[in-house]
Amino acid sequence: MALVRYFPCRKIPLLSWSRNVDQFELPSLGSLRAFFSTQKLIGDEPVLVRDFIHTALYDPQKGYFSQRSKSVGVLERSIKFNQLEGRKAYMKLLEKVYKQSDISWFTPVELFKPWYAHGIAEAILRTTNLSVPLKIYEIGGGSGTCAKGVLDYIMLNAPERIYNNMSYTSIEISPSLAKIQKETVAQVGSHLSKFRVECRDASDLSGWKNVEQQPCWVIMLEVLDNLPHDLVYSKSQVSPWMEVLVENKPESEALSELYKPLEDPLIKRCIEIVEHEDDPVSKPKEIWSKLFPKPRRSWLPTGCLKLLEVLHAKLPKMSLIASDFSFLPDVKVSGERAPLVSTKKDGCSSDYSSYLDAKGDADIFFPTDFWLLERMDHYCSGWRKMEKDGTPSKKGRKRRTLTLDTSAFMDEFGLPSKTRTKDGYNPLLDDFKNTKFYLSVPTHNTK
Image (cartoon, rainbow, N blue to C red; front, side, top):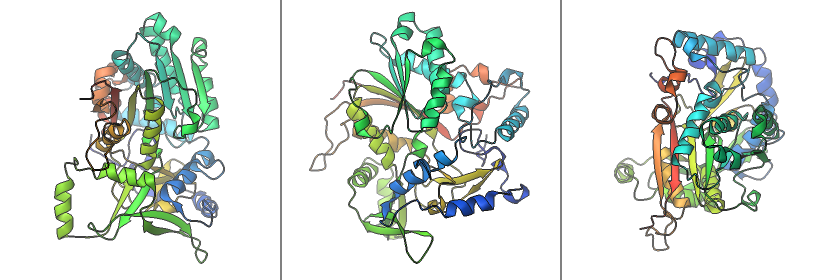
């Protein structure tokens, strides 16, 4: 399937395959924007871009996820794909569901429940050491659909002792979603003794107290795309990077950018990883930039780096499974790895050309550079850290990693027949061309 503006997955509104937004009536969108435009997301002091994005998304009063309490959809019942004729019938069903619910998105694990979560559970069971109690952490568990699906699958398919001795902990920053997760998992009474929710920020090191450093699994589904990023700027490709801050100017209601020499340690560490000499395209880029210098902007996944640093510090024996967007179309914001900034009302979307326009009314989500994610994973495990002389360190444990397209992952670990329509069309395998899975497990090989 060719990449189009509509994706039957998280955050891309159902009716947005049409770019002619004017054909849909938006009676309250103007007033909604006017309301949010008066919100003051930052104070008088300039803040780094990652702090602005964190506030725009997660502030308890002004943030997008608190303003949009029903942004994450929950299907009343699973879709019976085998009863649908084909793609046309599936799209018609989705349109009906979105209109009835008036929510911002359904996650893949929700659209394809329970089969999506069952594929993840199978991947865990095949690669984990079942001689020790199974411990699972999920970062950003949404409505709890993944947790329930994984627990269901292990209860039905693993040896009884595995299910009886396992634990599943959800790390959820949203109190309202934490409540929904408990209700979802509680649908099966035996799950409750194995499941708990900790309402906190997973990237906050202080929250990981009294954690046993034992083998465990960490699940992150559509989490990386909403992690705060930083922005760096340089006047040309041969000029040094400058960190970008967001400020309120007294003479203007609009926010503006401020450029300063690099000072932030997290940004510096991220640039070190991004610009490491192993980058297969770094040399051609360097030659080209000297011939044709021009201004450049680069978005850095500093939120991801911070989270991985915390996870590796507190869970050094963890195995990781993450899925997210590898590519986003029609992005209007400038810069390498730039986000899509989109708001939704009455079933259709409107995209902003600047992240500064997001005043709590818009989702800000990024594509994941999976090659860079692998580098950061190795770096945070200690294998990729640089010595003072610039040579790679051999400390820590090198990790075994694998990146798979969603279709390949589900072919290997899932049950594709369960999401296939009568004419052979399979939305889980055919439509998710812009999403990937990343698997990472520790190894004792340090040679």
